[in-house]
Image (cartoon, rainbow over all chains, first blue to last red; front, side, top):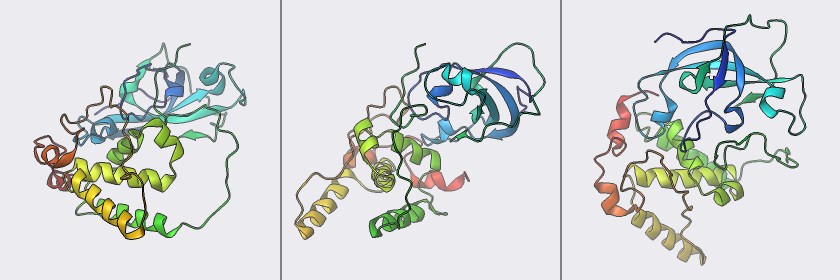
Length: 113
Length: 153
């Protein structure tokens, strides 16, 4: 299964409020980020969680989100920091043309589980 | 901007208040729960997967989720999944809990965590009521532990 996105692609996390077990945290839904890395395809946890076979597998990505994009001024956070989360491909939509990855900036330390 | 509905576990960004980061030794009960979970999930049995365990914990009622400790959530998940997989019935668990309560002279509920309504979650139908009938009738894919054995995670 080939990956739909590559490093540097801008993506939007689907604002899907389906209930039940998903691996996408709500605070990232509807937020825009940049793909850092693709981790290959894995059995779909949303199927495995209900005794399914996890097929078809889904590609998992590291996606970086700027904290300003995530929280939009709401609350205390480091404005120049970012958060990196693992997001499965079916949660991501393409967002415009690619931009080169910002290699110089270190991604944030905080990772969403 | 309206944020999607979310479960009690989906708490990223919420005010957490002060967090107690002090170390403590696991209690005997915690060790036992840990050991039981390891045995239930060890190959070749592997009665359920990590993702099912997460789903079972996330299915706890929000009040229960928030008021329960880490291993308490594990114990609730074990109970729910053992019944769901047809390994134990609700009646067997209840009977045994009643015995234990009697042995120690304890009052109180059976220890079954209230479940959140699945709300569209693809849980197998007819499982909510639990009980021997519900557990046995399961022709659904999640019914048998035997199904589990074939696939590595």
